[in-house]
Length: 360
Image (cartoon, rainbow, N blue to C red; front, side, top):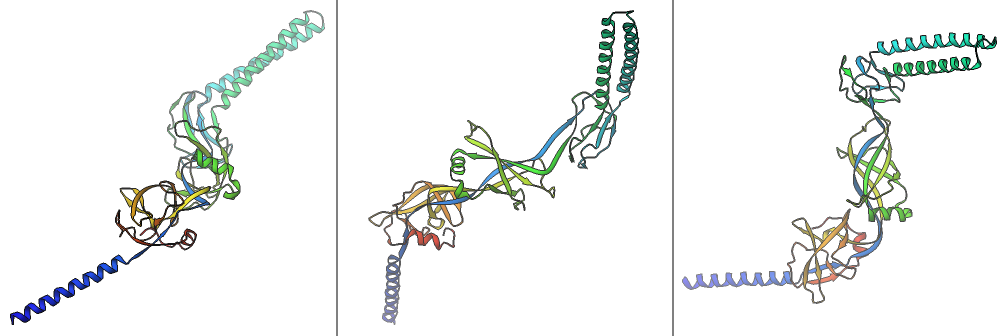
């Protein structure tokens, strides 16, 4: 009985060892596909953080001193151009106008008398000129007084939306005090900063980018329905950041966008001689991207690479690889560093044309 038991145990061990040998042989016989980076011209959709500004946004400030007598609007209200917004107590300025009118009337009488006397040679012609100068000065004072009076009624210079009202009815307003802000949101400007290389690519390869349209990704992640047009580029680069500011204009007929919002501009940029690899040929360690470069001896060596841009299924590499490098295409999570592997090369053009998956 003992002999039978030992025989069974020995047979079982032989079977296990045999299975392991077959498994190792199977693992050793795995052929891993490889490819090479491909250098080509392409375009990318790059996102830039943007600040949204109304086409017209101004502060409305008091031009005269006095008590805030009337507030005709509310916060968030849409107003029309020329609509009365505020009135500062006008009595003092009305009195100045009446006084100036009286002085004009007096000067007119004096001019009339001087003209009669001068025509009769009773006084010299200079007396008439002095009277005329006095009348002109009185009229100027009247115009000034009327201007000050008009400043007590504050009107909207254009149609737009009223912002917050920091002062309440009856507040003592000084000259220059902020009454509110007014925004014309019919058109919206989006300002965003572009690096020097991206700026040069944008300017020198206009044919590849197609047009100067851009999209706006709003803060909730949705795309604004209207396309924007890049209108202007600032005249100088920022020496500290190395960036230059672009401005795009978006139609905003539904008034969805408001001054002060943020978003992301999505712009098409041409890339010349970009070095491209499949995403699935990479793996990540502590936010760093790596690939396995297969040497002539068939040994896999991990190599850190820098990613310039990310496109669907592919990366544009800025550092770490050359066109002639042979990289592991699949099995990056299975192969170990310094492991000798059996490989089969695949044409990078065919690999890129058939990409469907992300890195594995």
